[in-house]
Image (tube, rainbow, N blue to C red):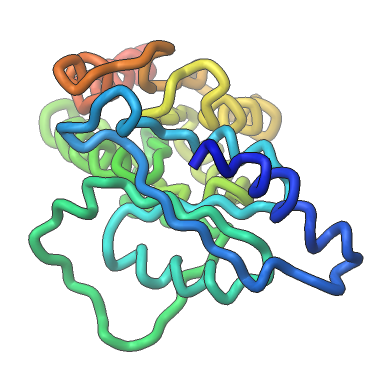
Length: 240
């Protein structure tokens, strides 16, 4: 979708604002696959959400499952603002998922608290949510660490209040995403947590992300922020 960057960032994102709300983009929603899935090469395993999150006027959404994808996609289609709907390729490999037949929408700009906890907050989106759910279970079972897991759902606009409320409760935060560390959206979340929750923090904010390098599928297992990298970060912050 990078060849369409000019049309999305300079035209679609500004069209409604430029017209004084007289026109929109026909409720434009752009669907695009993203993230690694096991066989994506250099060009097909990217997570470029932060590129578009720096473009006011766009809404950026990344579901974690088919169930959330349907509700969020309908919300995007009916939203007057142009939306970029990132679809983690892992969803294409699901054999089956329980998705209602009826029409339903899920709110944009609202994060989901999937597991409530008291020791540390884990924040992610898309495929990485499943990694965080798995590591939260391991941390609780093997180390007695209670993790609160948040699916951000919408990258832009993102739910600052839900994140802040959670971190003020737990005192610790890890933001994890597949995209590279430098300039990743985790940096924006970390900065906001620092501003809003500084006096509540028991340890530094940690980002567990991909590396600042291209990667082929043969090195995917070394590049991705897997559960063991996340677990190590959890133990370090809890024992800080």
